[in-house]
Amino acid sequence: MTDLPVITHWIDGAPFDGTSTRSAPVFNPALGAVAKHVRLAGAVDVDTAVASAQAAYPGWRDTSQARRQGVMFTFRELLNARKGELADILTAEHGKVTADALGEIARGLEVVEFALGMPHLTKGEYSENVSTGVDVYTLRQPLGVVGIISPFNFPAMVPLWFFPIAIAAGNTVVLKPSEKDPSASNWMAALMTEAGLPAGVLNVVHGDKEAVDALLVHPHVQAISFVGSTPIAKYIYETAAHHGKRVQALGGAKNHMLVLPDADLDLAADAAVNAGFGSAGERCMAISVVVAVEPVADELVAKITERLKGLRVGDGMRGCDMGPLITQAHRDKVASYIDVARTDGAEVVVDGRGIEVDGDASGFWLGPTLFDRVGTDSDVYLDEIFGPVLSIVRVGSYTEGLTLINRSRYGNGTAIFTNDGGAARRFQNEVQVGMVGINVPIPVPVAYHAFGGWKDSLFGDAKAYGPAGIAFYTREKAITSRWLDPSHGGINLGFPQNA
Image 1 (tube, one colour):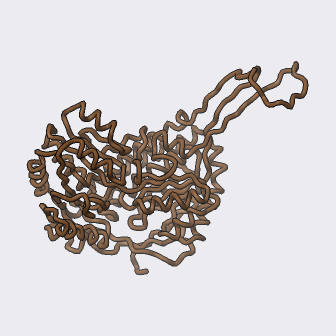
Image 2 (cartoon, rainbow, N blue to C red):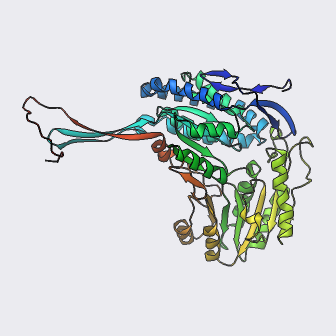
Image 3 (tube, rainbow, N blue to C red):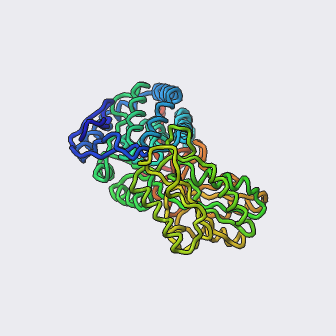
């Protein structure tokens, strides 16, 4: 490694170098240059993190709910007060513009605030005198050590979807963030320590597949939470479940936005641009396909094209609308779909290559890209491109558009734009996806409803956060209790019966 900063793991409440000598570069995507290096954990380092979490678990499990909530409340206050610091970290390592970074943190804060209600959310139930002198009640208890594997596109929000709920419920955590933008996780772990979290309750190990596999098979890890691409989500689910763990593995998407002829086309065009190109399209809830019901496609394409002319692409620290992509390899892969679209007969309305940017020429730039008349057999339509690429597919009717959406292998999110309440109600009933927006392009639920899709967009036992998150990170125990009075007597070996 060079003289550049080195990001270490965070284990047992402090930075930890680990034993592995492997490392990876961390880029500033707006400069196209290596800014730091990050250590990559091996199995021994994962063992150390899990051992720390396992040692901390009994004490944290038995810590009063009032004390746990005090720590979480302090963390919430510190995070809200210092979110600007975290936003700068996100922009420097991911590339997203400052407004996007602050929005990501705000959505993560919602889940922290939801977790503050844990004493209420984990209350059990009580039935008195179910049989003579017998009471039955239920408890919700934590699992133990849980693993979280988070993606590069939301280095703050996705960990915040998981670890506040897991920790507030009494679990301890080993978090493995993306090695592409790892600093946010260390920053949040240090802030949790500052908030009063005991050492070992939240640990961070950096790494690649070697660290992931070590978590998936570790005998002391009880559950795995994951967000990423569908092939890896499926692998995570199958491997961890095979080793007896609970799994929530959120996969990829190809989100459609159905625009009916009665829709407000200005609203629809604004939504398509916001949802298609925010965070440079690197989000699983991005709209990547606009399904235009004729005869509105020409007008809608014109309105979207006009809006793209005004977007300012550049360094996220300079008040731009859209930043770079995460790596050069990813930028090149996304850009390659422009040639695929042209070969497959689509019209390239806006080509994002070679644009003028407000930033260093070496950054990983690709401007907003718009395709029209995209065929549904093209890889442009079928693949999750995960970049600033928006495809227009033209259909002749609502039914044709609905059929198209339901035929997709993915079922993450979708949206309909219409002024017809009956059509919207029919759509929400008939569409086969997990999250639906009605005149809302990115229907990410608030923290007290769960996030997750259907079909190849979700593998495992539960969606993220909300009631599903509480159920995932706890397990129910039923207690049947009888306190005998002095008049009892006799032995009865029969099966217990109600009386």
